[in-house]
Length: 354
Image 1 (cartoon, rainbow, N blue to C red):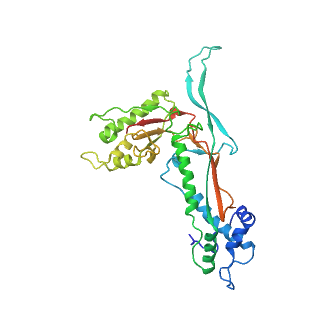
Image 2 (cartoon, helix red, strand yellow):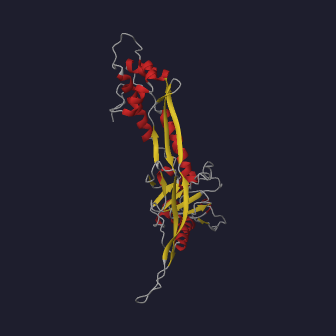
Image 3 (cartoon, one colour):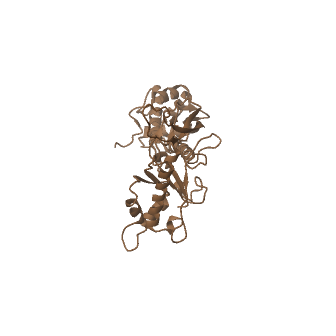
């Protein structure tokens, strides 16, 4: 990978950014672009180069913000994401379903065939606008220009753009997990999502949490959760993914079964082959009060399939062209989000008190 060069920070740049800089921000960037050393030979000459120079700086910064990922925000990576909803829509309507009815052996020319329908409950979720901004003042632009003239390998920093992206993603992640009651947005942990809840039984030690249970008892718990969904849906749903708090996952991985070198985690994985994906989410930990207010560790069994549940993103994080505002160039950022859509809530199950 080539080293970043502030003289030419991007092979290309946004034409929209260049035009905005040379029109809406012309006075500001032209002042910042003035030769800091009169008489010196410059690498960038010509009035149009001010727009191009700073447009390339922004291209580098914006790319870093778009590419930035925050692994601790697990909702953004666990669940399928779609962008089928038009970004101009104000809300989405969908149904959550459960199968009803039965089939029967029939006689020839029967006219009383049993109906097999799908029982659907309508839901409506508002699509919320999420926005923030970042910017650079005229002195920072001057310093950037001066560094370029002096050959100092330092450009406008991308930290602010990355911070804007993080604040945005934190809000989206919160919608995924907790929803928004006022906007009628459903989250995985919100009380109105119709996902069934499984109650853990106490182990031989008299407690239900997994720190107090043996490997066999934990494996039996997972089998019990799977059987619960199987019974509830008459074997229609077959969840394939299990999510638990990071710290619990680590504890089970470090804990060894007495008399063996095998970890409890590897044992329960081996004895529950129905689970294809073993995943972690810090948001489910009892210590994460921002997401989990129950005071208990939470587990989630679900089907990793967009037909069952998905995160609806009508408009992903977008950085607009710069604007001139109070001796700064400001980049406004926005996106539109509808949280989780759960057409088949019985394809998942929540477990409290791990």
